[in-house]
Length: 346
Ligand code: CP3
Image (cartoon, rainbow, N blue to C red; front, side, top):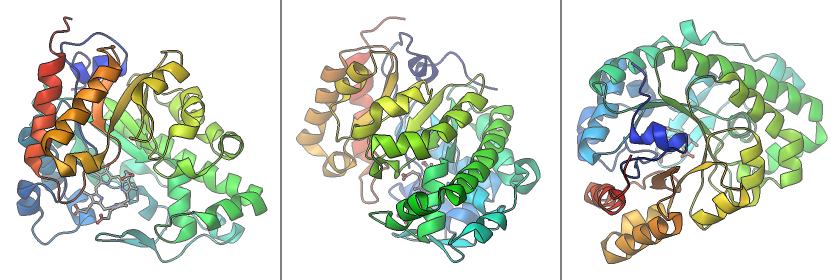
């Protein structure tokens, strides 16, 4: 069942909450001993394709950390398989694509997936995860955003500059448009089935779009992002970008309830720049969670002071949990945030 009345969902909609909710990107990951035990010798894609195991790692992370939301266990690359993209995910590197997009014929060769029949394990994993979260903790669905998926498909792997992606965008705008459109159609279908299966919110990961200028973002990306957000009804929508500070206003204009930002921007600037008309998720530096100790506590408190108990704050890291993070540090963050914000009354 979809959750509507929990601190996480209320915060997404900017309503008052009993306390500031917390969850972490990559909260089900190798830093967690129970995840490593459940994982055994399997890789991320194998886990994601096993609904029982995938739902167990979701619920296990929620139990282990005491967070206010779970996130489905999948990877942004998964639905690309059904589009005929060939890739593997290399540990400590990321996705490597063996048939990268070079021109229009590569885009024409992409297949439009039917998410319901092509990705049945994702939906079965959602059904089971919702049961395991026993009606108390909301489950977040997600997809990669068209730009970030296109970047992996064009670069063939992780890249700091995304130069090939930007060069294709500038030199072949029609090929770019067709690629973005085919990804946008896939993502709309994929998210709508996740919502049908009962996820309580959706997050769009545009991890790497921070490499664009606002002008290029508006010309080449934002219409597609807006089309996706417009198509999602009835659950709150979260937009995530890793290096978001130059583009906050543009992200806000694409229509999500929540902007998930990283540590490069003082959190109060997001509200100021969006006229308080947004919820904000973030934004502790994951390296502070890795460091732990007093410095971590100081930085957690600093973010809470900056947020000033406003409704519409979801505490999180600015990006995913780093691999060697002590799970105890994350439990301490959850406890500190809950304890320091509990004064709020609903
Ligand atoms: O709790 C969760 O967040 C789990 C679900 C999840 C995974 N990937 C599983 C995974 C989510 C939400 C993702 C999203 C994802 N995947 C993004 C967007 C978020 C971001 O970090 O910006 C991106 C860019 C990817 C592509 C990808 N997959 C990368 C860059 C990596 C890292 C490679 C590595 O080994 O560090 C992966 C692998 C991956 N996907 C892991 C997990 C838990 C790590 C491997 C493991 O724990 O077994």
